[in-house]
Amino acid sequence: MERSEELYRHLTDLYRRAEQRNVPVFSAFLSPAEQEDFRRDPPKGGIRFSFEGGFPDAERRILVCGSEEDLGFRPEPPVRFVRFSPVSEKYSEELTHRDYLGAILSLGIERNLVGDLLIRENRAAVVCLEQAVPLLISLKEVRRTRVTGEECGPDLPEFTPVFPRNKRQYRLGAPGHSGGRLLRSFPESRRTALSRGKSADKRPSGDRPRQKDQRGQRDLCPRLREIHL
Image (cartoon, rainbow, N blue to C red):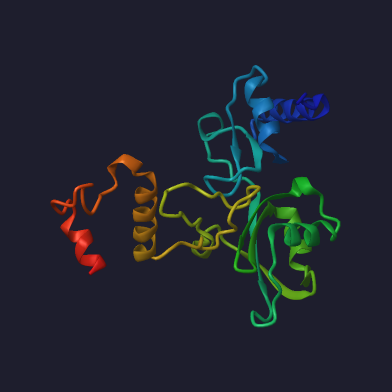
């Protein structure tokens, strides 16, 4: 995919502004591809830059021009969190990432003002820029479910990603993620039975036990004989 030259020039202008004024400058939210384009071909200058998305594994991030080493103080990115919950959990529909994102964009909020959406059990935490908070809080309905929103801090233990037993990571907010819901798994006894069944299916036909040889002189598998008695 070719990079957007217009966006790249805009990000370069932000970088130059931070360098000339010796102040931190921030962009709107960027997709992973847009971040990579800037990272591969950064402007030449005397200040550092980084990307901030509100939490370590965020996909959508803003460009932060300037660092504590360059400026003498730590930049504070204007990243905020808004948490949504159904007014009535009992009568709530099943709300997905698409449902929340569609409702947010219908408010007239531009996509680059919103970062990742963390979804769990019909609730959502939205990463956004500071200027988008008042409009986000005004959201009162997702699909036909009434919701309430409030600004909150970055500490959101209820939205911590859930890891299945095989340790494969499902990132919240990413396409195809599990939405933070606990993945369904078989009980230990059931998994054991399944594994035994698979082992039996893979056993070569030549290794299967026989009850007696062709002459019937001796029992080749006493345990199997007991089962058939």
